[in-house]
Image (cartoon, rainbow over all chains, first blue to last red):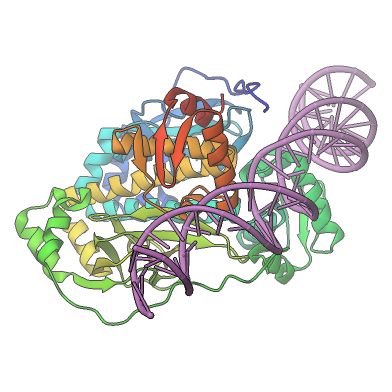
Length: 243
Length: 243
DNA sequence: CGATACTTTGAAGTGTGTCAAACTCTGTGG
DNA sequence: CCACAGAGTTTGACACACTTCAAAGTATCG
């Protein structure tokens, strides 16, 4: 049984700054805040604290007490869990306009997972009380928040299904189809390193590498570095659903 | 690659009846509804349709369109996913006072997973519109609903961590510790068949059986049929966290 | 152009799933 | 009260997907 080389690679940075310039813009891109009046957006924006963090910095840790929640203004953030032997499972990657760390605002008070920046990022932070008050005052915001959590639940159900009921080739096939959809093109670049994609799919680099090769050899895709071209989308669909 | 013997064992029953007797009582036991005024509880109760279902009956299926959500009045319900080869993953088991199938009320419109009765059960059903209206009118209910979804998210994070980062012995150890906590006793009966426990832990009967025996042989537990006695709780803790 | 991070490949080991058969309960009808 | 049916459970032999460990190969950027 392997164990305990799992020293966190992420460091922690201190210091924070203000800066509302892109904040309101990011909020306008956010499903959560989009419905709000400009007035309310301004008010919420003025309550936010914006911090800049470089790549690979820990934002919070699983089990830690939460005093509020975050929004990505610029950059990218991973939310993840790590096993005692050091293997990582990425639960989600958040980009500009997306909020994270909201679970303890409504329940439990501690973060269920860890978060860290993937690249240099600007993050907005709101206190717990602020969001609860806003939600209690504005039924539309409450419904938007409910929709957000419900959507996340749906995502986790899919992930549980994938990790527990599908093998790695099926998971990768499904992931590639999602990327293809979001890029609306058969050709695209992976937005993560392959190691990160592996952690996102619940496996490891070496396995992912072999499966990528298999998919390429069997004519489903073409692979050059991080560039992927989907050659047989229906085939990937078949693979993904396990038929 | 195994495949396609996965014919659903669950049948579907028709017919429904009304019956509010235990309904309000169950609602009083529900975290979601507890905060409501008696008046509002009565109103919501009057809007519910109560159906009785025998054991092993399908309630809804993954991907199906949702017109509302459910509460267990009496009995037990599993929410689960099935792989193409017939393996089942139980996401959750709900008992009296617990609601399920609420995700599509707030997002997406379709059920993310399947649901079926584990035993003869009485289920209350509410229309989608009713809940949304109630949530919009009552900020406390909105916050309670947010807490419910956030708690479920937390549960799924734990489950993902277990399935993806832990081996079966660790998962079983963790599960037994939870049962021990909820029964507040070192000795208790499994509330599910071992096959169902296996599906709940993301494995299969045969593997679970071997792991149970291993835990017993190594002195962590004593096992007689479905009766479990925890002998070494700290040991299980160690096992569960993978140290 | 060299350092560092990322990626690929190989060989070997392991946990878990698969298949098949025997065994054990539990409740029911004779 | 016993015998039986059926579901649930256990066990064994085997297969295999995936991980682990190790090393070489390839980008990428200052």
